[in-house]
Length: 336
Ligand SMILES: Nc1ncnc2c1ncn2[C@@H]1O[C@H](COP(=O)(O)OP(=O)(O)O)[C@@H](O)[C@H]1O
Ligand SMILES: [Mg+2]
Image (cartoon, rainbow, N blue to C red; front, side, top):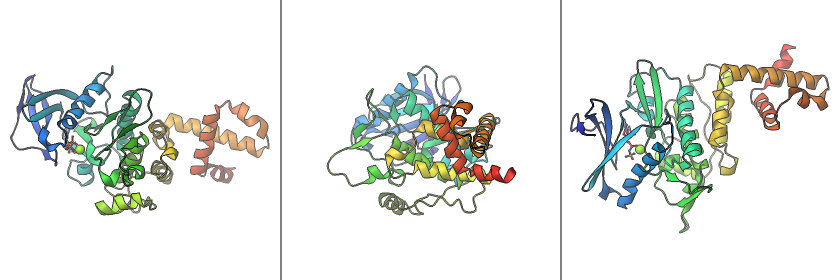
């Protein structure tokens, strides 16, 4: 395929790349990520993004929430990666630099989760640079869609392994505390839980339209993470939640994602299944089961309630946990 730049003016420039709008020979508009190999400590690092894109493409169905890859061209010292053209990223959206889109903050978080979920569970990859500007947004008449991008630091886990041992230049103010700690000469063991921590910050950023839970200034944020300061999840003056219940659930989920102990963080699968993302059918099922549970408890019918509800143990524990978060027991006691 041949690609022709629409203009020599880039639509975005970072320290390592420039993004141009291009027309493909079939008339489709695409984005070109243009990189100078010499900008990278090691030219291979520049090509790693291409390898990662190709790995994602190997899967049978291409996910909606990962930016589409079209191809690559290498010209001497330069590399161009061609991909689907989007309208901007989540940072620009929060700062009001994009047209209003129909997606709610919750839908944005849900789609961002889907993208990372795909990388973790289908590609065995850790993104390692999860932050608002690495989630693109494409807006059209029917709505908008979120797409994870920038696989320059992404690491493929050797099959069967739960971690990858390497160093990384991930963005400090989004980095999990276990990776911010001073290097002792050894490379770090990267685990998927690092992405979950960073994604928790992205959620908070999205709900609050741009606030970082660890402070206002870049270096302070990284320092506060490193010193394990309590994050500010107060959602003060935040308009993103249609109900108190949603606010409680967002607080619960982000608090868990920002746990300083990586072993206690939810996996991306657990984030995806959190009640904040439930549809109305799942909510009705929960209310029915929780209602049933607390009524049986009241009747002192404790031995058989588990059996009667016919629930799997983990499902049962989840019902108890969510009932606690939503203060369900006292809410239904008030009703009866
Ligand atoms: N496909 C795209 N469509 C529109 N804008 C894009 C696209 N890809 C990247 N961008 C913009 O360019 C920025 C940098 O791209 P990214 O791939 O993250 O490069 P870097 O590795 O330099 O961070 C993104 O944050 C986004 O604003
Ligand atoms: Mg980037």
